[in-house]
Length: 141
Image (cartoon, rainbow, N blue to C red; front, side, top):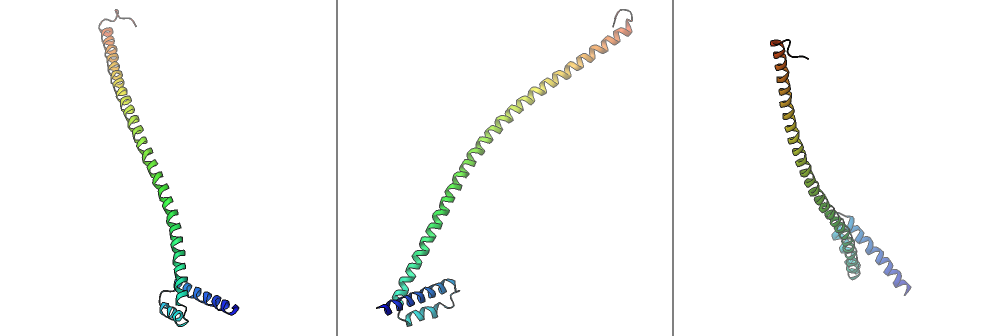
């Protein structure tokens, strides 16, 4: 019985090595590897081990996909937050722009008024000078 168990371990190790060889090879040795399994009459065990290996990789792929999916969901939520923040910033910029436009209009009106007053003062000054030249004794400074 111990000999059978030892043969099973050798067979398992052999089949594990065949599967590893199939995984890393470019496929050129696949035919000879599978043929050797059938020659040794280990097809059932080989298929079982191959199925276990496929299940292992399926499980690994599922784990990876779940992790990537969670990262995708997190990134999507972050993107939605960026969109919300961008919309908020756009509204704030529009509000600030409106305030700047109003302040600019007010400044333009005050500047125009100041220029008008400057011209008025200049005209008054010129009138005073003209009158003081025409009537030198009447206007005092």
